[in-house]
Length: 419
Image (cartoon, rainbow, N blue to C red; front, top):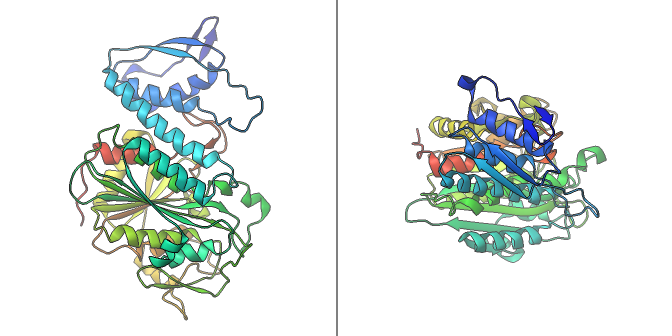
């Protein structure tokens, strides 16, 4: 990139090697480099207006709500010189706004975005996006036997919520999305050290991703029905927290011995997965900041996908590639299931003393709550939900990861057959 008075020249490489990813990344970097300019005129290569708009909006996005005097000088007007269909520009803006919604939710402080506040926000989004929305309070959650969600919520003075969203463009079985919504994770009685707790307001990034996806389905003309399940709670040690050795009963009757109170996400996801499966969906996809092992395995820019259904994995990976979000498959090894055995319950929520393969064990735990005949995929976004530093279309902080990939899958990809 070269800046001269009144203009910016940004090289995109060899013309024959140009692709959507290169344009999206360049647009994100460009957006940060032109702050302070009020009016831009930009020539975009034909066929690449959508990735350019996505990259420019997302690369220039900042969360400044709590800054007293933010430096918010930005661009008032951008004129794109392109022959592309304006519909592509509108779709790009819808997708970018969905990502920004997810990012802004993750950026909110935990004392602001409590489970109740998140549920209220979901109701607002549903109203604007033409979705059906139902919110369960703690009494309804108890009536519905969501023992995992209730158990984790016991430690907090803020009560839990369960949000169910439905997008119904027509008849047919839905695709189900499940998003982990721990609005602050102190670790419960297995208290996290302070350095590890700094980012724990982001432990609801999975639920934020799913809400972002749901917000855009109607505007993008998604042809398939989609259900979303958002279990929302804090994981705190202050009220009546679950103890090590306690046994919780999940909605389907499975009992779980608590070995680590900080392995709480899988407990609330278990109830939500059971609920999702009861609707007989074509597939279930869960999104969760679940394990540090996922980040250790693939770093901060690649999201692992673990699935019981290779065709679903193939379609998801292809959609993620088209959307410019790197996904990578990890196995679901049946030989490791024995490591989840308990002497006092059906399962343990954590295998004490094990340092290796814990992302796979967490996925195996979740898989227990999905019928074998239901295609299911698990996205562990622990490493990719936050960016340590700005890069490409990502500012430092929340990334809104997987919103683009899931929208591409739901709107553009064919329905994956099960094995």
